[in-house]
Image 1 (cartoon, one colour):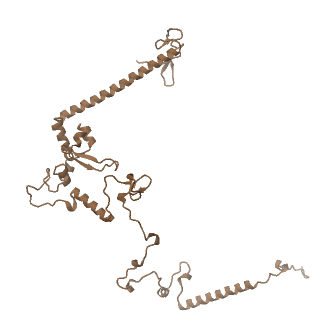
Image 2: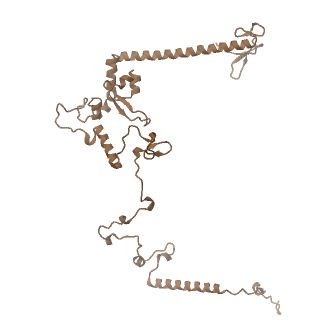
Amino acid sequence: MAENGRPTTPPGATQGLSNKPPLTPEQVKRIEINRLKAKALRDQREAEAASGTRPTGNLAAGQKRSHDAVLNSRAPANVRDGSSMPTGFRPLDDIQPARNFAKYVEYDFSKMTDTKGGFLTSDDDPHNKALKVSGAEEKPAHMTLKEWERHQLLKKLREQKAGPFQPGMSIEKSEQTKVCRECGSMEIDMKWDEIFGYAVCNSCKEEFPEKYSLLTKTEAREDYLLTDSELKDEELLPHLERPNPHKSTWNNMMLFLRCQVEEYAFTKKWGSAEALDEAFEKRESEKKRRKQDKFKSKLQELKKRTRVEAYKRGRQNGGGGDFGDDVNKGGKHTHVWGRSVENDEGIGVKTCMECGMKVEELEFG
């Protein structure tokens, strides 16, 4: 409080504290270096602002460069100007593959076998017979993989008489020219003509499926009652072989032409379609009879085993007798039924008062 009675401001809290320790020479040196760097950076920015250029690295976010800055900027080294390149220069020729991909192994997938433990080739284990594909041709050593694939393709086209191996067609018809037996077209299926001896075009095969559809061996055996020996005779019934669609390792499918199968079954083997139907019904009835006889024989065996077991149980209890007899007293048991009581399902149930046997009672009327 001053002499004149006016309040005065108290002294600050820092007045009573001791002074800070002086800076070390290293701190002074670092401060001076930072000051000089900031001054040099400020001078550089002032010079760039005066000349109108500014590097892209110092631009703020969202700020555009000036037109002069874009023109004066230096293009990166990876950008190539096609007009300045010499003629015949190919940039991709200078690009070299990575060291890990410079060497590779060319695998022949036609020789590989799935052993359920990985794909192996016969070259890995020449003495293992499981790795050798049965019935498959091996690629010769002097042929590359592309040459071998081309050879296999040409072989397939030669067998099917397709592509370059398809017989030529003449505009003028002659006696030797084969035409479709349905529409007279010369675009017939050469594979069918060679195997089945039927000159038919693809459109007629789809138009008349009741004649030219293909039957499997199972269908021909079950529907037309043909034997395996008849179906294997190629002179009697020629067939077309196709890979099995269910599993590639199974035997090839044998496909027969429907009209040839019906002609042989109706005219040569059974005589008519009615005779085939009678034979089919006879076989079905015979199959049903054998099934019933087998069921009856098993039922008789079951009854026989039941009687023997019941007889053995009766002998063990000290006597014999028929079913329902009182074995212990030696007399015939007569049930004494009580009052009918409905169960949870609403059916009346009677219980014998002596032996406890229960029977259900149904009322009709």
